[in-house]
Length: 258
Image 1: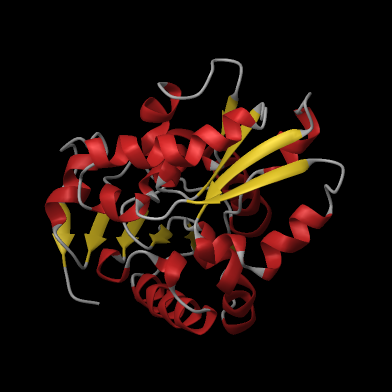
Image 2: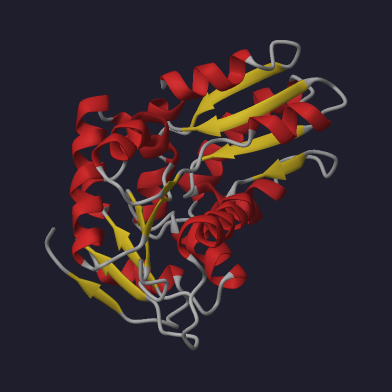
């Protein structure tokens, strides 16, 4: 396999750019193609069959772009569809799921909170993971409305602040000391979240771990790129302005129908 082929990354929208950043920072010489399926966001309220169908559609697009590895930069798509994707395609897949393990392992109160989509919290994979940590009390909260606000560019809106207060206050009162962000959109809310939760509560997202796993799989199965640093490509099937803004206007975004 040609190790200079691009890494493909897809998400239900712009949130997976938090994963893309971590991969790009760790592997700057790797060419990356990012696909935002914002037209169908959020995935968290869809059925498993719908999520699998959308994930296959996204994968087909990236494979047509000659990608050597696919990163499913969406918790909901990973927990509901990655098994089906691995069965259908020969290309390696890297998934993202809530980082329950480090939170449960390091928690002193043995009470942790997880903010995630309904699709992630209801998934078989998530429930298998939580079963491994029965000694830890896990407070689950569905982040209704958060993805839509992020996709609309309303990260710092009064509505966002109100929603976050309503979701986080019960966790704070329950004495959590770790908060797991179970959606790749949510790292963009960290500045907002830090204004609400006490300083002793640690926030965990999966970006760095996914980047390290991507590097590991590339080295083991394909090889790292020997090319010079290349410009990443970004595609969306919705308004390109929101994705361009979240990328701080540093990269061009192509708006296409897929």
